[in-house]
Structures are given as C-alpha cells and as structure tokens.
Image (cartoon, rainbow, N blue to C red; front, side, top):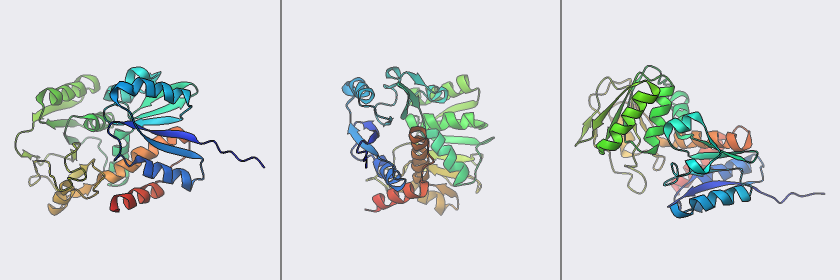
Length: 285
C-alpha cells in the first residue's frame, strides 16, 4: 500500500512574524479536511525577501501570505498581480498557477464578507470612515469603493499618507474621498454608516488602548468595525457597544480573509467554523 508522506506547503513571510496566528487556523483547516498540507510561519527580513520568493518557487510552495513589511516590496517579484491588489498597491496572498506566482489581496475581501455576512450590512451607498492609512486601511477603502460605497473619509495623523490615499481613491476609483487630519479626538459624524479602526491601536498586548475617537454623535444604524482580532473585544469595540452601536470585531475578518486564501490555494471551501474555533482557543490561552 502506497503512503504519501509529501506535504504541500504554504506559509507566511514577515518580519517580525512570531506572533502571527494564521498558522493556527490554516493548519486546523487542513487537519479537519484530511489534507496533507502544512502552513509554516517564516521569519524573512526585507533584505532576504527576493531570495525567499526564489526559494518558494524552487521548493514548490503552493502559496504564501505576506505581512509587514513585505506587502508592497513583493510586487515586482511576482509574475502577475490581480487588478484589485494592484489598485490597493499591496499583496498579502500569493497563489501558484502552474509555474507562475500570482499576487492577490484578501484583506479587504475578508472585511467585506464579514460586514455583509456577520453584520448584515451592505456598504453600497454608504459613507465609510476609515481610521488609518496603512495596508489594512488601503485594502478596506479600495474594496468598499469597488463595492459601491458613496463616499470615503480617511482619518490619519500623517497628512502626506492620508491625503495620498484619499487622492488615490478619488482618481482611480472615481469616488468622493476626503482626508481629515487626525488631531486629538476625532468626532465621528452622524452621517457615518461604517466606522472602521484600521490602525494597530488596541492590538495585544495593548488591548486596553483606544484610538482617540468620539462616538457620541454616531447614529444607531452605524456599524463600528475593528480590524484587530486579538483581543477580540478591544476597547474600541467595547466603547461602541456601550454607546448602543452594533460592533464587529476583527476575528471574523481574519477568518474570512484566511478562508479566501485557503480556497485560492486548495480550490476547496474552507471549514470556517473550525478555523474560528481554533483561533478563539489560541487567543484565550
């Protein structure tokens, strides 16, 4: 009887990467479906990224995730980049298509799926306010624009970065976009339909940190979202709930973007309940 001991490999390249929890949900999914696959968490410095991508090709990896600081630097190392990832200007997922490596971005897609399926909210026609202008903010803003949002406000402390993102949205996606300089507490207006914390403020172990935002004027129909998955209930989320607002944690976004990547790599539907349970257990430990 033939036994196949060969594992199909995927993983994540980042620096630092030790606290990245993606392996927890992906390996749980592989085990649940009986797939002989392994997700590896690999420390790759910026200087070694090109060599790491060459190694990925040589060792037949089926794909890889990219995290800080590689999401932009990887672009010229790939054979092709999906249109939406090129609009975002960053790649967080690479899939293999024959001998070619294709860059994708699942961050914004995972966010949209969470908003629609977990919260029952359609961003079409919405006024979306995004706190931050980094990679997650870019992905969320672009995907919301592609989904038909009416207007997007970028709130950021760095005027050059924030204004550049708003200008990018207006020029390339033909959406009403503006930049607001983040000084002291940002007062979110009552015309806000989605308020998204796309910064790292509140990330473990600083879960009690709070973005300087006032939510008192928000309408009850507003959905408040945090991209941070750990801790699941950040102070930002707790504050929204204390104001009687519906709040979406970062855990569904993490699971959904992981499930999209899983499908890209394996061509199978991801066992999302298994993935979420594995992450929730890891975050409690």
